[in-house]
Length: 392
Image 1 (cartoon, rainbow, N blue to C red):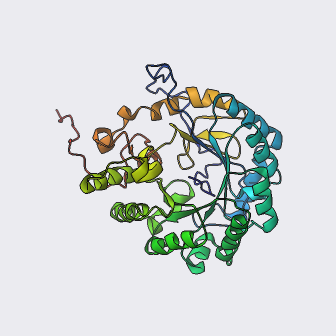
Image 2: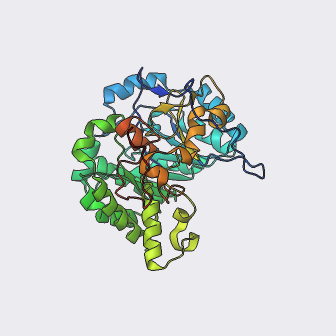
Image 3: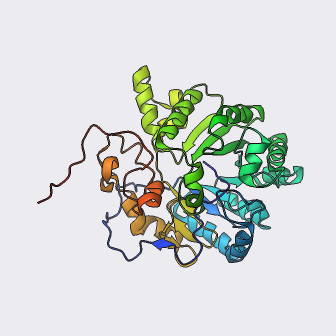
């Protein structure tokens, strides 16, 4: 689960925070045996806002360059890594922006690896040369994800707004594979490429990728400005996820549907209809994970230290510039709330798939401003009816 762009884009005064608000709280999140819940598995760090592309769903270049001035410094980055490893050992994904525009990116990666973390890199691929690929390999970065948003240059370059970016990304992949660096392909799924998904799947295999992750567009931040034009409907998302399930059975690639928690409902419905048991041997990692992981086993740290549940949910839990990461992860009221699925509202709150799906908290927030509301892009209607108090 690597993505080369952050869809928050909330730099400025409008960013939200739950600090100080009255929230339902749980005491310490312990299992009966004493083991803490919500172990952090995956942390995305927006190492910089600097970028060389101006993608449809992202910031303008002039905005990116201006905001990059507030990136965490090298010293702050090293201190953040130290604080992170005190309490957690997640996979650390260096994202952006374009992380390869950060001059100290390999210094930070080497330091994190030296502290015992698995490090991955999420890039648009256009800056990967043979030399850069060699550095990635020698430093010990575990995997590189590259975004491919169409089966051809016309579609990809139109979305990325840079002619030649498709060919340059493929060149970057070739350099990485030449240095035996595992490559993952990411695709943001929307109207511009929904009919090209089979072609993107075949392309991922042809270039030697080991994984294909599809990202369903989340209408928050800059994504909200384009959502009406390119967002798939709930019915279209359902169709895509059924196609995704069918392709995953071929096991030609490691496949993951991201920002699509309802896939885990679809997977179980399909497996039940087929009489198939869900386990690692039949469904891979999808068998042991769940839908929305925001604030429970995944989180996102912005270029200036803000901690969010994920890269698409612009509600701030704290800031690593002013507070140790471990304190934020373990004690922030926002995270405590997200770890209580019984608080979910609407049909998500009564759905029998609540523990494996949970609905996208970012889409709920983007649609109605309440991260506990029901997933707005799921067509499923739970058999249990939502009880409503009759008007007096």
